[in-house]
Length: 151
Image: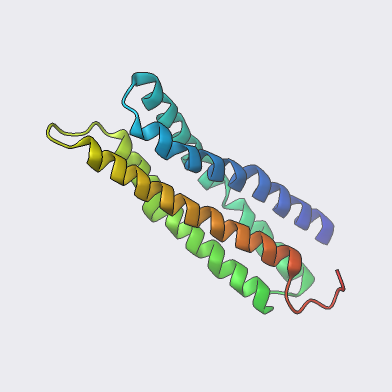
């Protein structure tokens, strides 16, 4: 059962978090542009982020199930991973997705293109932090500090 849970957890991480990381990273570049096809691309990337964010809920669900099966729920590396995952999820839900939505809405008259570029740059920075958090979680999952498995 452990191998099945771990397999589903890893597959969910790859298939759900990967697309969010890529789409969120591409979004600011396309949102800066004003042409209709770029707006369409940005809207598609935003939808991709929203949908896969919901699908991504499977990652911690199967992660907790795997951790419980392995008896490692109180290990420091897992607790750190859970905290970093929660921060990444909050960043996505509270900053990245709303930032994307704001950039997709037409700018009111008088709004400078520089303001739009600055908002896109902030969004790119937040997305970079989101991706860095996931990279750290992946390293923690592989290295598992304090592990006695010898792997």
